[in-house]
Image (cartoon, rainbow over all chains, first blue to last red; front, top):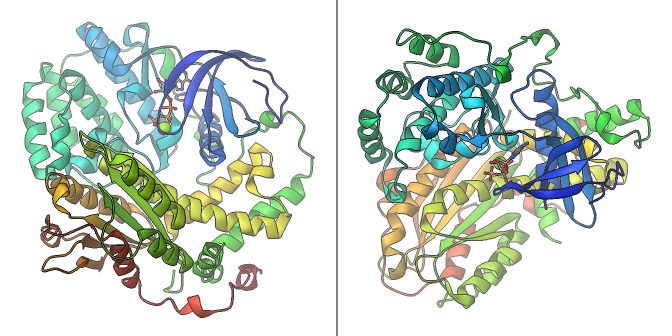
Length: 320
Length: 243
Ligand SMILES: Nc1ncnc2c1ncn2[C@@H]1O[C@H](COP(=O)(O)OP(=O)(O)OP(=O)(O)O)[C@@H](O)[C@H]1O
Ligand SMILES: [Mg+2]
């Protein structure tokens, strides 16, 4: 495969996974081995790339973005760091008790790091949590669901969704992720039956509390219950609560170093593009002019006065 | 944000078969599209199959209605309803932004270098969160749907949870077809910001055919007249926004 804008050639090795948005492949390219996410839709690729860029400027939770490109006629892709590891639901049951605790902590440290940037992971499911080194190294993949705190969750999986269980709303916050993660842990032991889809949230909860009571790890069960009941609201709270149980040794986990470089983080700024190494110098260097049009697009699209005509545009376009 | 903000309008048809009563649904869908209402279709495939004909019809309705079509198992319904509503909004806004881009730069999103597309998508994403939205969920209640109705009800409740989380205003109405007492279609719940589960109990399997076309028309009538529909083409956005 060859990229249209960068000219980079990629050798596709094997598929790493697939989902509703696209497919991910292991590839060999100018950056060595890497993971490529391909979609048929330019919008999804562009969206995820933007998030990866913003997040990777301040944290290492997600794969490092390498470059974004098109393969004409209709494939859109980006290339990122290849993350090795086994999905959570397959890794977790095989870990020893101490390793399990370590894996849970590693995920929580990762979430805490993301939360410090005011983003929620939201689409937490076991396939998106990759575990390596006996639980010592945990990474998150798929930024498709990552949502700024306070905004509506853009992508989720029903069984790992707080609102599905009637345990809270669907706006991104730290607790949304904690709930999602607790449900992940819980369902590695007992996956929910499809029949719950036809049940009310109250009936779903009845099932949930039953499964929780059966969870074999007593310390974890206790913390998870407090999370699901909204008594524990953030990752630090969970970590504190679990440490009051059995005391695991503290260690610096390889994957979740927290450099805490918040100072450089521009909150919610759209202009914040940490690096442009992606475009390989092919873009005309007219930065000033470019600012003008995106800024103007934003203005024309968002100004309240402008919004008046949105409906008109829509019906106008509908005529074609 | 005032009342004057633009509103995205969608009809979501949930069905498990083919229409067989009243006007062809494709015609009703085309009419909806003309009035700026996008029509999405979810075909529920249960054990058996929605059938070649049902599939073709579902696709042609979505095509005529400028929307999308998915065939799913009942378990997937909830996630699909949510995802389609989101994708349809995104698509509409993308078209709007694309138009604007063409005006400003003479380029469409796909012509832009990927890094610039990312910024366009941030605009689309912000718009999606903040615009107002009206959705009419239009549910097939013909006899074959009986067992799936509890799942449909929960999917509607679930959709409304997603919509309530948005920053823009959203409202949901629910229509069933056929309606009770020989009506072709019936409003189960008028536009409201939240779903009323007591009202949704009114989604019941009914006797009669599958009047999909009349149901789309009924759904369309719930939107009321948009004062701007009558204008002769949209004003340029920039008119009001340039400072
Ligand atoms: N950088 C990566 N390194 C290794 N594996 C990866 C990487 N990115 C994704 N994967 C694997 O590919 C799978 C699918 O990727 P991803 O979740 O991004 O696709 P998606 O289409 O968004 O899926 P979904 O519909 O589940 O959200 C992941 O669950 C993961 O197992
Ligand atoms: Mg995804």
